[in-house]
Amino acid sequence: MSSFLLILNIAAISGFSLFFLILGVSSYVEKEHRAVAITCIFFIFNILFWLQFIFRGEAPFTRALNLFILAGLGLFGIISLLRFFPASPLARNMKTACQYDERDNMFARNNLRKYPDLMDQYFKMHPKRESIDRQIHKKPEFGDPKQFYHDPYASPCFLAAFEYMERTIPASDGKPAIEKSSIDPEKFSETIKEIVHFYGGTDTGIVALEPYHFYSHKGRHGHHWGDKTDQTHKTAIVIIIPMRVGMLKKAPTNCVIQESAQKYVEGAKISNVLAAYIRNFGYQARAHNDANYDTLCVPLAVDAGLGELGRMGIFMHRTHGPCVRLAVVTTELVLPPSTPFHDPSMAAFCKICKKCADNCPSGSIANGEEPESRGFHHWSIDQEKCFSYWKTIGSDCGFCIACCPYTKPNTLFHKLVRFYISRNSLNQQIALFMDDLLYGRQMKIPKTNPKQIFKS
Image (cartoon, rainbow, N blue to C red; front, side):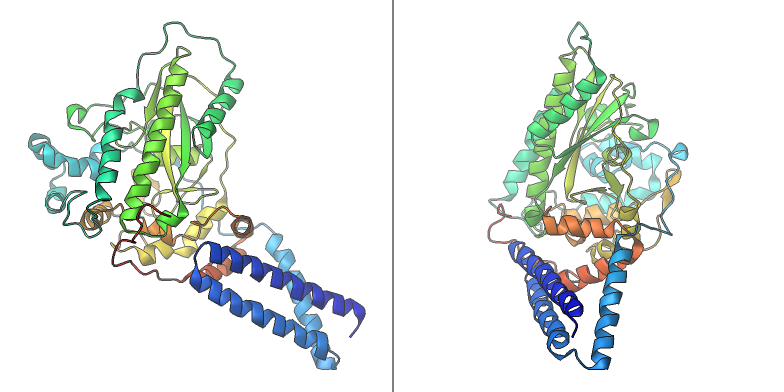
């Protein structure tokens, strides 16, 4: 064997061995036992495979095969770096988008059980929804011992968190200082991002508000049910709060609603502080956080360039995937918008993956193309099926988030995988195959809560 060919073989065996070693260690740390076992097999096979060429590569056929494989790997490596998406999804035409009425979401509709007069009024507006809504109303409420993943000691914790957020609603809005202070919009925007990071947010986007960013009417609480939302503000600041991957991987158990509640508390804290900060300069500002929205967080986060809309109908952050919670602050200030980040690779991957749809316990996620509603094409779920399942199990499920290949820790290895996926559709097919192989295509639903609910 020539020295040049020997060097190439040693480089190949070393490079692949290092890759599998990093993958194995990463999987072990993440407690992905299946991935560890398969990686060990790959590691051993890789060594045996290249040793055949290093020590038995003198035969003409073996040398020719060796050269063919090395050339193929080199070509494959070059192709992997090319960026092309021939079937990239078209941009959504939001000019035709109709506003969404908050009264139509399942949280608002479920809350109507407390307000019989409003419930009758709603069913007169939407008679076809009465039957399914009344069935959902009969199911136990969150925190009820009849729910599948109820825990007598843990469940009161998320109830306390949501009660706390209800009590903080008055802090979301208020009168601004009497005198308006002169500000530098660029400097002010940078300071806002620093404040969000300082208080625990991982990412921030700023976007000019459009009509479709607002709910048309309020619907979550009885005292202002049916009122039109305030749509006078000019700018939205979107706040990203990452959830712990280890907690979401225990979906759909009690762990998920505990993690959601904790991150909603963080979102309320950050957005309320930020809104008060802006009001101190004399400008109107309002925080929008869990159960207290005039805006739709997902389209704002997408338009702010922080990520994309996923097949599961929720926002997918460019780093943390769907494993995030959102909060928003709107203000009368006009601030410079964030640099748009619209990566076609995320939408393209959602189109081929379908892992969330295949695993959804309630069958709420579409397996086909993007459906159309409210005047434009976008991913959306069967919210009646989804919410009904939530009330059955006593958790906000999150199984789709746990299944998503983007729900991985932000380690060096997964950063490399995300970069690999972002290059082209061939890489995506390979990455999806490997994700299915290493982590499984079908995930098992736990029969009980883990022993330690609050530990990721």
